Length: 424
Image 1 (cartoon, rainbow, N blue to C red):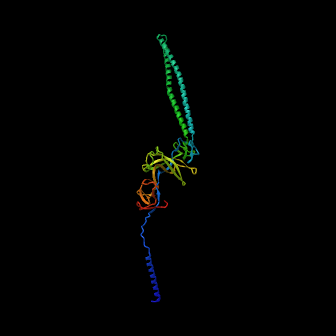
Image 2 (cartoon, rainbow, N blue to C red):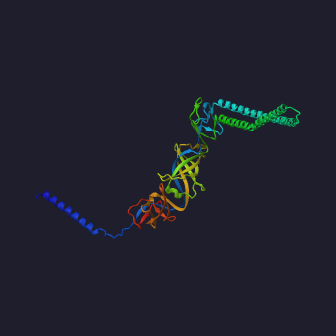
Image 3 (cartoon, helix red, strand yellow):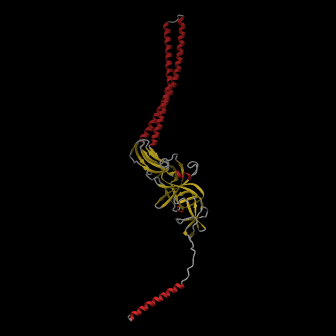
């Protein structure tokens, strides 16, 4: 073997020997392992304290605003429209008594005059008849006197004829005169008997003339259409010069101040309302509307409850009455509720005493919540009174101040150890 190769071999063995020596030394000097009992720290959870409070039940619904009192303007008499008020425009406010539309009234004015003349004619006929009655009464009185005289003359001559003092022809003439006077008296009495029916006929004619006169005045009045209340113009459908007929719609207005909103409440929410709803019990409601990113709220109330439930949807219609104006105190301006707006209604129902309102996500299937006591998790069954949006209202199963686990957990068991976050 060469000297160089031998030197390399010795060096390798030397290195190996040193390495073995170091390894043996490390093994001999290593520390002995100590037996340690594992400490269970538990899961880290976030909690919220249970707080009992008086909770007012809110029943939320939606509806469209409609006028509480809508008046359709129709023509009651035919004619051409000669004038329209400048205020009679869609969206304009009108005061009570404003003449909105005027139909040509000349024909109706002439009719009033004609009927007035007829009344005067009838009254004149009654006066004439009254005077005729007076004249007839005088003539009857005279005719009775004449008949009495003729009768006396006839009786006198009849006695004389028995003594043969006068001729028979003279007695016959006297009898004829007596009968003629009786005939005249009877004719006058017949005329007087006809006075009463004639008077009744003239009175009826006068009364009819008065009725027609009132009708003519009513038609004259109806030729002008006035606003029956303070309100807003909803629709205008005529122009000046247009000829209208009876019953033709000219426009519509609605009363200012109060508006109605019909909402439909599901049967399951009836229990949240007090007894006597819509009758003796006043139930408040908030009406909410969003416009250009700003929310407006009107205060209203349940005005009435419909008598019939919708068979198809199983909902009960209710009518909410609300003031049309809401005042923005901060900006000192007004915002008016208008028909056609789609709004949210929050009806304030019963108040539940000492209930717990918690987020819906802390309640697990089976109506249980996880609570923490002495760093141990407790599974508790609760009674859910109502689920409303993202919240759950609990009336049984929780106590004041009890810590409810907010952190989502799975595979849990009652009594397991947990840790609370430093923030709680």
